Image 1: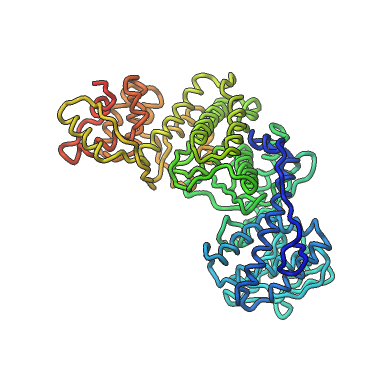
Image 2: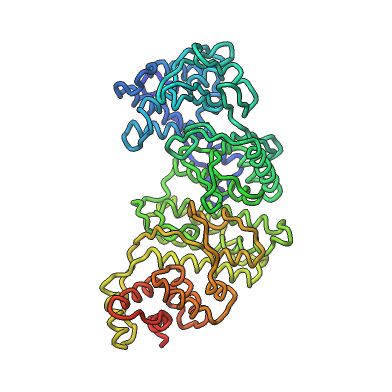
Length: 611
């Protein structure tokens, strides 16, 4: 923020060089307190640049602030607060919700984002930031802040409510003698509001909640945010206050999850203590799955629905903190230069992913694999088999993703070095003797199941080649035609993952939707079919059971996937179908257009060259 003249560039700028030790630790999926402290330093530099860009662009945009004070007054307050209380200013600027607001404000100014109100209602949050900065620095201030539905948010403090105001309006704020007062002509929420204990609800005021735990030998306080409009990934959210019972459950899960991480992975617990600053409570999916997310704009923050237990909470923390670390690294280095096309299979998601999304997912699941490896020997006896399955499945899925990334020409030199670190870490779990062979085979089956169904749902083989195959089948000729590469054609229909859930059930696992996939919201899942049960339990009648399902629903992707898996399990000569399962459904569809629907088992065996 400090400059040689208002709106003039500084004479010097900070440049960050990444020490090899930090880079290598991050590439291995690790990075302790020192690494995270370094990332926080680089993120602070980035926030300063974003704040500078926002202020400059506001100054160049006539009427951007509408009825609010001039941008010059914000410059004066923020530069003085930074000089007077640099650490308090740093923490305020590094607040995750501040980062989200900065990104959102810049997108609105540049017409690449939208808002639910006038431009000045988002940009004017700047003056709420000024009020908090002044309070922390002991500066007197009188300013005006925007109202959103009769509320004004003060980051890291709480939400002021002024009922009866228009949806988009303003109110005055005074900071004096270490106290903040909102609207001197009406409802007063200070000094009681901002100076009350965290989470307090007073007339006209809703304070932020906090979660408390111990990590790395020191107290850890994390905001549990349910009121800040900038607590979402991008667009503003209305307040959604948690009840006392919900707060108690969050506290219990958070405390026990940190205890678990302290026991299994002290370095990760210390990294979280250094970097985690806020959690945003969001509802679970309609099917009850735990939802979680994070953003590169919000270093130190994450969104999550309430996990059902301490293990799921620990996995969620690890998952999202991996995204946080990688997001900060990507602000410093370019690991891939891809166009963003959604074309890759991510073994934990149902939708096609761009290369950047696959990289993020692979890194998150590298951390999750690490968690299961460390937790395995501490798992209660009743959960041991399920923990073995999770370790074997996540290792296998992550390895598949890393192999896909390494083969993509869009990865940069830094990206390949990063992948080498990930691969080296994965190799340490390749032959983990703690996973019993039978359970490892179930993990291989689950990974193959997902990959096969993804291809059936999302890949469309060349139509001319499919028609040629149909003519050959009808004529009784061999299936020797080579089919051109399939094009990605996303299928938005929901998956049930019934067979993988059945495996978990057979292994005695509790239903932990948050540990099963990263596909986003899911509807309530139907239970496994009789054909699914036959396949998972090794019943040789499974192929015919799937054929009966397909007679009733000839396009059902889960039934086609089950048929291919069942045939590959009972007849090794049909295993080539696993490489291009999408051809089978497309061929059967083409044959149905020219005559009666043929037996899908017969078509599958012909296509595999085994009849």
